[in-house]
Image 1: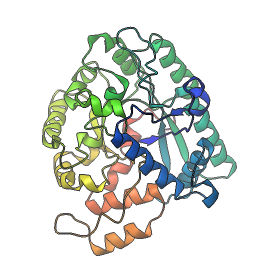
Image 2 (image 1 turned 135 degrees about the vertical axis):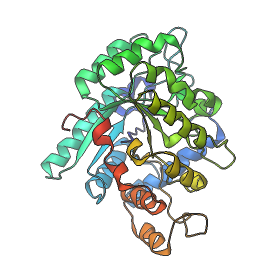
Image 3 (image 1 turned 30 degrees about the horizontal axis):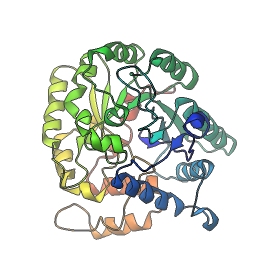
Length: 349
């Protein structure tokens, strides 16, 4: 329930048709590294003549192949990601926008993927994850467009990259609209290294800021279990587990997702997540197309990976399946693969 749509468009005015992804001169050096890392990973699955420069269509062909050939995954949620908008005047902050996957673009691509699955008689589904920045002047219109046109199963925010302070009382109307429409909020928590504004404003992604939407009745899914990305990051997983216990005592609807937890640099917090968060509170996510590493995750005294597990990981080429196999080897319950059925606003529950 955590896969990203992708576009290779360089014209922000044409984002509805090809999305927008432009790493510029003002981008953090690490963001450039992440972009190159993802590009190499996607290109490795494409024909040789596409390796140097793949298009938006190439990416979605790769995505369709990954889902249609997966032995583990029957459905995915493909996420839009709204642009940063000013909290002061609601204007598009085009000068700092590196990645914008509009709702219109995502809806159209999902329709195409589902159509191709049907005509090829592949019994799998693609669902829509909307994204509306509440700083927009027209956030109500954009919310209603997403709701009426795409039938979303959740809404997604990355507060740091989108310049959103979740504690701002001005967003109460936004939270109430989510709650009234039974729309879960998937919200990034923990360090964000894929976007420059995420690196600059990591404090906006602190999990405590989820308190206000929770108290407004929103079902909240904390992406990545608030896990650090690198051992040098502050590890607040234990605090997050206690925050989840608080939410449970208060009768609030807080979940976490497992997206990108197969990253080798997060192995040191896996046992803490497994012991601190019940499996029925975790939803499976991959963070596709963020690469799923295999060779660094080797058997050692510091993890649960056996030699058999390791060989199976190496033998699994499908990136969606490899993510599942790695997490299974770490000890994540297969129950996390179906928790989304209870939590998301699926049209065919």
